[in-house]
Length: 146
Image (tube, rainbow, N blue to C red):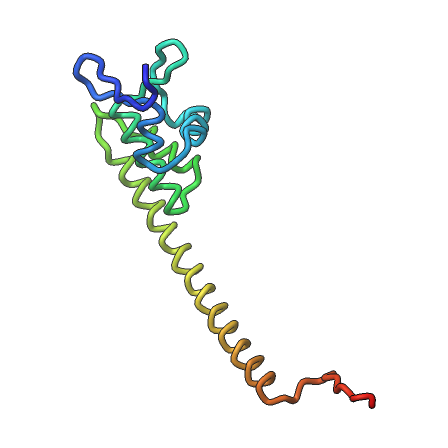
């Protein structure tokens, strides 16, 4: 079986690890890492991993969560709280709280970054002015020896 071929079992979308790695721009190793952490659970056909639409959806959420700065534990909890048969209120409330917390953290980090950028810009201007003035402390003058 070609590792890059979408696997179709009983007309339900199935994916190889290579399919998902290519689609999401990650390595197969990354996907296996998420499997080891219990975040995705592919079926097996011998040594071949077969991912379902559900696994693909979970992987998409995992990668989005990581990009937004959520820990794997937080992402796992969000995913594990989902139940297709039940109310999603607890999952949604937990996710909403975590999103608000993360937004607050990122806004604070942005403020810190903006402050650091301003300080660096000011420092660079000061250094450039100092260098262009020619008044550099410790400047060595060269003497010509005739």
